[in-house]
Image (tube, rainbow over all chains, first blue to last red; front, side, top):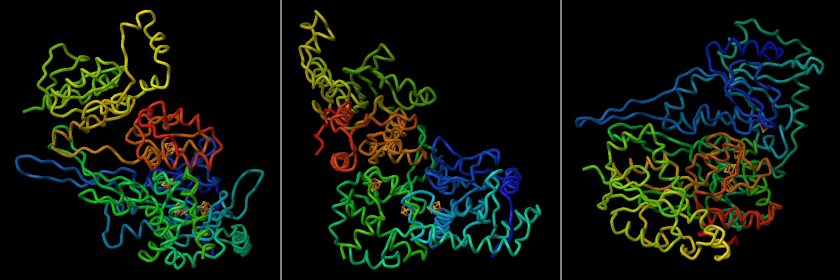
Length: 350
Length: 247
Ligand code: SF4
Ligand code: SF4
Ligand code: SF4
Ligand code: SF4
């Protein structure tokens, strides 16, 4: 069921309005690729984008971030926490990335609420743009159900039709939050959906179903069991001999949320900052603990760990899939190690 | 007591020593925190009672060898800075050429007055406590090293390859443009400066781990249609001394 229909032109006007109150980030084309970038005007956004090379994660969980500042003087120790509560609007988020953010939300709110993430997230407004078909070759979001988002956005826009002459798109809009509803309705933007609009939306959904080819023939629901039985497979070693342990798969993944913490001191030593930075389980020192012991020393054990996280453990722990099928890991891997291929090879081994 | 610091140069362009002077904003606080007692690029007085000695340049002549042995005796801690001192650097390219030819090329008729030896990193000659690689050395890493030394913290080089920094900066991987970049096998910490400007990583911070070099051999053979000799030439540019031929 749609809540509203809206032209893209009108949507971009609303985004320009939003820009008075928020920093706006969205897909911008650079040569042949799209990246999430801050923009000052909505018309710099390209909402026809296929996919962004990296997800919008960096705006919620920055690659490097100060957690608090510390100061030592006359035997006292003072800390000042640092939170970023600048209002942010991320415009043009595909369902995979919406679902990835949902997982981050859960992971950072669950067990140890992380105020640094949560403060930013509370100040973030998300406009989703649905994908009528695969954005590029090799994605398996259809298998992972990453290509459908039902929550995690403020509004989601479904491109129902396109006027090829003027290039304007008619979006069917679904509200995800009250803020999303207000965003559209306060401005009285767009129209209530007509019966034809609802029919067009039904057709859209059916065509979308057909548009995503199945990449994991045995089905993702078989993966947890498959992995359970594949712990000792020779495939880990055979594949990991190509692995650079470069972490590109982790760091380009919209669902990876691991980080490392460190202190940065000033030369005067009395002051400094506790920071955190992205980390990844494929990196050599990820599992190194005090005393220098590394409990995942071999590249094969690190590769297995990542694949287990993505298709089994995260789901078991958070109740939300650890992989949305965007294939950014596969594209980022200069050794051409592909997670889909690993799933399918393991299934065939059995 | 402020630690007594010295900065020495062997066979090199001395760019790494200059990089220290380029820390303009922090130079005064460094001078507050340490006492520089021996630095040819920056001062005339000399002392040989040294807590931490930084050395740039490769050991490439008999004279270099004598000097570095002397530095070792005078310094409590000896730190190699830059690709030349840590890896042998560009100097090691001569190790693959004919000695008479390159000496004649460099010194002309006077060649006989300038004995040289195959270029080596200083760790091949004396015991080195720390290495700060890069061409030039990463000056922020130097600053971090000094800060850690003052605080009595254990300094460790980053063990992640350059790719990590590309991802953190959100830049497009050069492999997407069909360029073979040495980032996956090279020690990070340079803030991916070359890929940030669209240039492939040439490995100036050295090979990050032997297993990465092995993986490169396998990948370049099995996954890419490239001439291994070209890639090896790239690896050799800075990594000649550490070269374990691609498996
Ligand atoms: S594991 Fe790969 S496909 Fe899955 S969400 Fe991460 S980057 Fe995307
Ligand atoms: S991976 Fe799937 S959901 Fe994500 S942008 Fe591509 S088609 Fe859309
Ligand atoms: S991107 Fe590829 S080579 Fe790098 S750590 Fe991941 S699987 Fe290994
Ligand atoms: S450009 Fe080079 S260093 Fe950067 S991610 Fe790609 S391979 Fe790694």
